Image (cartoon, rainbow, N blue to C red; front, side):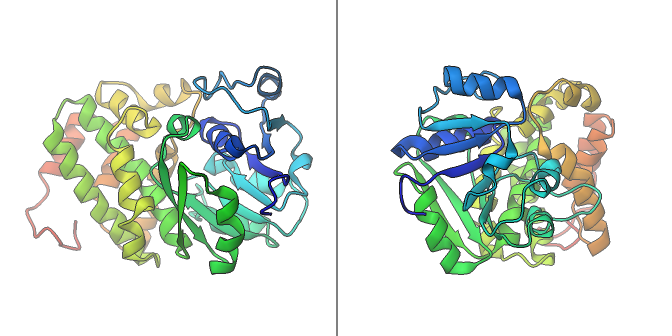
Length: 334
């Protein structure tokens, strides 16, 4: 797999999948990019552009797009960048093969409450699962700007030694972890918190409020992660705090921009229907609320986002958070 002639596959040609394909192709490696949309496959191959999801990038010649998922079946390494809620069905449509699956989508499966690595293992039991997560805006990765990520490997250092050289580039640096649960929880919870920070922006509540929300949101992430077996040091790293700070600070984040539109008076149902790209936090919020209740974990900010997505008034929700009983900063009650 270290041979540059070897092909690596990327499942999903949204903004993030396309950016990862572009990054991988930056040293001339052949990259096979699967897209569901026939017209997008044709555009990538003919024009070297993805005007639907990543219009800023001129794609490398060594990227080849396909709409036939069977073309991906024999590859020994796949980066899986499908929307979280569709990952199981996409992977389940592929023939069984012993391969490394690097999960790059951030979310929790609605209905089952399963993390993506459990979803993937259920439909692809012969595969070795890794999770790639961290502070990454697609357009910056595609442009070759410096980026660092967590690569959490369920197969430990042996899997890391297989995958890391394939993924690493001069401007794209992975760091090793074996805490797959922590990497996934950081990426999932931060999406919900980014919606909350967007609401703060939309309501013009100021930088103090956003900083406080990031800090208190991190406490909720840590509390939830540790209850599910994640390590605190993982959540303090790139895939937790690092990703949280980035996603909660810019309208380039789909989740932040959704929250901002909610704070400005938009209705969640209409905003979601009008979007080409998926704000995974909107799907993750109700699952997190259910899991938190099941485990007895206080997550008031996550619950507030869930209420907003159900249609509650943003100012009323913020007032409710501020009116909660006064307590110690490290109180388990949040």
